Image (cartoon, rainbow, N blue to C red):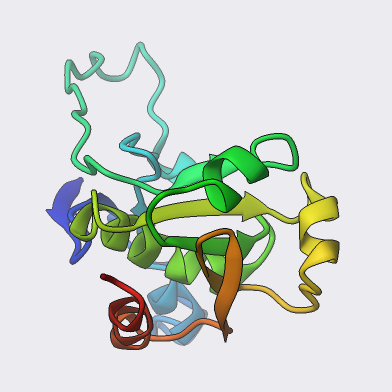
Length: 179
């Protein structure tokens, strides 16, 4: 098992198989090769390990490996109840990420939002709103596709970014509204 650090300073755990299945002709199938390793990003500082590599307790002693939190700043989760206090009444601009757990592109930009939360700490606030758990706010702002990021300043929506966009797009949008 190997660990490495990704660009957003989160832990990445990589597990690989000892061998791939061979087909009857003795050639390793491309499907087996594509599943030879799995990279699982950590979320909120907790590392997840692939279930494919389980070992019974009697076969090997338990590892005494401990995991530490690597991501220091992350976007604050908000819901229908905390929306007004966290976003509309904020004294700094707020980047809101409208997302859902089943959305692949949402999971792709999640580390970027967390990274931006750390980079702009004190100048801007980054929050995440799960549209499945808080449909009221999503409906109020006309969210029809996710991920959607909105910038709020002084309680008003001032910009919208739809889709999984590169970090540079998010940064240029944020920079326009910082004092």
